[in-house]
Length: 125
Length: 326
Image 1 (cartoon, each protein chain N blue to C red):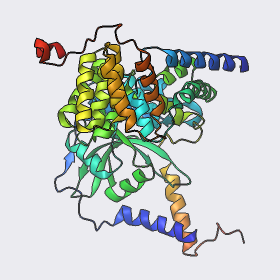
Image 2 (cartoon, rainbow over the protein chains, first blue to last red):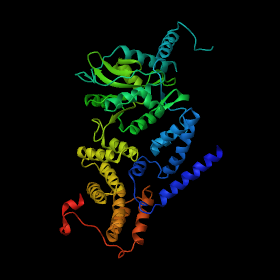
Image 3 (cartoon, rainbow over the protein chains, first blue to last red):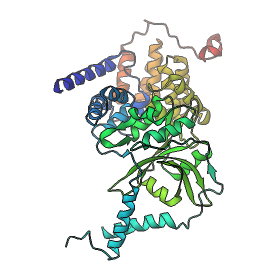
Image 4 (tube, each protein chain N blue to C red):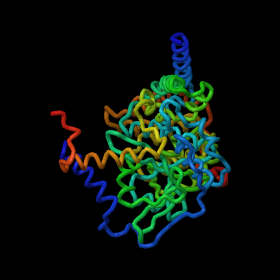
């Protein structure tokens, strides 16, 4: 697993170098780069994106996504999207089920009762 | 802490039950043709996405989308992956501005809006996707395709509250050549740039065209369109657009830099040097674009003036027909 990771990072870096060393586009400023500068992000963000791609794929697989599907899914993401996801898959909002809203309603009732002094469940003392 | 909780409860109760605000619109709007897919367990993401994709003319079931977006261990789907899945199915997703005004504008233009809501609390969230299809001022309700309800009516204030707890996040899906009614030029450029290489190039071309028809003199859009034309091999189109940017905004370093590169590629070394020197002269020393511009200048200096014939022809000059540049 560790070896695979190292290899994937090496591949990522070599792809990136190929991009950087491409003679024709060397000094063109692309739209994404330009927007990045406007947003005060760094021009080296692309480096992170290539690494983020491997991270997000590994995380998806670790969270139960089929490896082949995970690969297709990271391919569908832009660099900026990959960077937003990397390391955040546990914490970002995951919309799933609306049915448990009832639990929320019960909680509201409990808070109201607590605040009005009818019950006393949130104070430890 | 207690005060905060009390205010929260008050907000929900007031938002949900009493509304003294004037209605947001005088006329109701409801998109009754938007299909409905009742969600199965944890699948509100695929159900909501299938709803807007089918409304946009595709024939697709929530089950076809599950493997694109669902994360088993999270029992749900992430926003970014829903957006990416819309692209994978051949539609351009546009994130609307996070306010009710933009939401209503899209509804009135006939587009349902996929939204994320937090049905519970900021600290104890319950995330849920749904599709807003209508607004009824008389009853002070939004109408949503949500969960297992085809026509869930949520009080305006309660919806706004739940939506704001999810940063008022929502998007519409677009077919080729469509432009959202509520779009800003900046938002449109970001949408097209994020989708670059991930949607059909013809789709992107139609997107820039539609954008330029609405905002013909927006420097950012012109610059992005120029880059797109350059990337697709249309040097003449790109040149024209970079020049248009620079007419509107002479101190646009990125546009002048790219113009200089383009001139270099066409063998117009002298002109390229003039352009890049001018761009660098106006640029602050710590500008993040400086390295790219200096690269261009070094290339221009190294280029041999006599090595290539300058294929720079102004439209109309030199006796060439104008359409050679189209």
